[in-house]
Image (cartoon, rainbow, N blue to C red; front, side):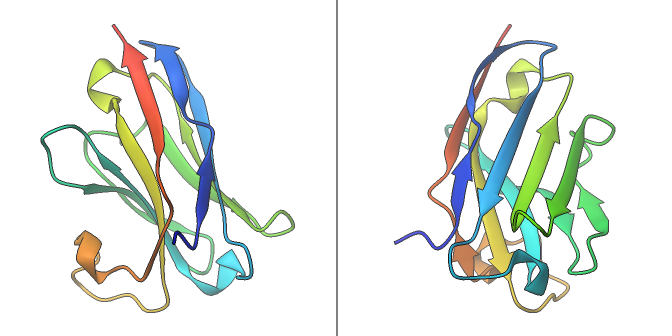
Length: 125
């Protein structure tokens, strides 16, 4: 059972934008390190962006730097992933994840504690 809930995925043309949202029923997102991962068909799940408990983003995958922004709205208890200038290679299932503590291996999906069910993002070229 997913502990986090993503929304906002869909079909968009290349160059377009989408904003993904992640909520955490029964939890306060500001108490956790929050991440967005993605997994394309036939590929491993990869960390796209990381948000510290302070609300400061401290990691973006090289492939999304300058195009994606992770942020948090404490009043809404929601974490966002704003995705601009989307490319066909951004097509994947996007997952929200949370962890209570941060270690040096945070890029590894298996080290994260809580996950959403994923939301599909499809970018048409």
